[in-house]
Image (cartoon, rainbow, N blue to C red; front, side):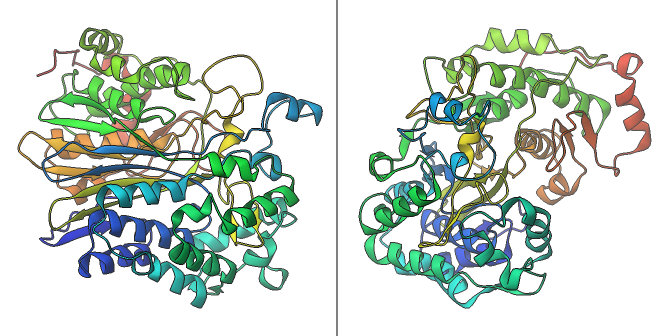
Length: 494
């Protein structure tokens, strides 16, 4: 999700052209990167509803010119009534993926918008920031093939849940590609947010509507949980690699994994991009990083992800465990998720890297009738058994695959980058960044080049290594039998 086109007046990139256009309109009207990013986020919630919603969570990196970014953690916590006993009493050994008991955490996205505007806004009105999203929700937006196909694929699973059929099954059938998606309830909610303020999502009459719909559906999230929620402004994780310092989000996100992959790869000898050494090195670094992630990342606690990134000897040891000739055993447990990443840089050099999600496509499947908001199911990633950083308990934050990235190069360049894709997010980040920063590919070439995924892909339970068929056959064969092919070895970082 990068754009190689150059601009002297700012740039917006997102997974939907209408959302990017909304952000660009704000920049042209004199808005800042923060204001344009919120406009993009709001529009994405309207035009890309299968992948994100204002009923989800969001994470942000926001930087001023010449300064390191500030991180905004807009992750909702588990409801006060969401504990292990609630699920055990109803016969569940794990949290269901869909329905009211999957909607067990507060939606933090709107608190993230509010905090980002506090950090980087220049006073543009909410009417102006949210205006395009409101218009598209009121007038309708043409459904694309992705949305139409996803509604059809999930119809049997979701059609009985509150509000879903009214929005996505007009006349009882899945919305068709080219048909106009109308979201009048969501438009009214966005208008109320513009007039009453973003905080009204958590406190006030709008919050009472959310709480009433959630209670009627059977969700454990109540008005007291909404009122208690605040976004957190936190120090981002960071690590130095050759020529740049990289930034990402701390737990409960997997940002540490994204940074570890690139920090470990920076320690490996590799002279040519798209080579066996390049792919094998990043894939094996991913395995090392994911082991750390799976052991420690969840509700923020005593474990310090930054301490791991600051431990250069520890990073050297991890890189030294990468065998230049043999693939390490795999896999551990797969992790999924559906998400949008978007980035903005304005004419003054302010930069925003952001990600917004409902976890699964359409989240919990609840489209709350009074507000038209799809509520996330991020809390279904909590564990009901054993101990660990992702154990369900009231007030805990769930594990997130979401991790927007930013790089500050030693020569003054700033790069915002990211992707959707669950487990694939840190891997695609590593592919794009290494191609551009280490091997000198331009951004379009770095994005266009074929990708790989170690772990589960969207809609698939297989956890093996998957490669696009655009890779040369000889390279694929070498990855299948690496023992006789690799000639590089770990090196000390520059």
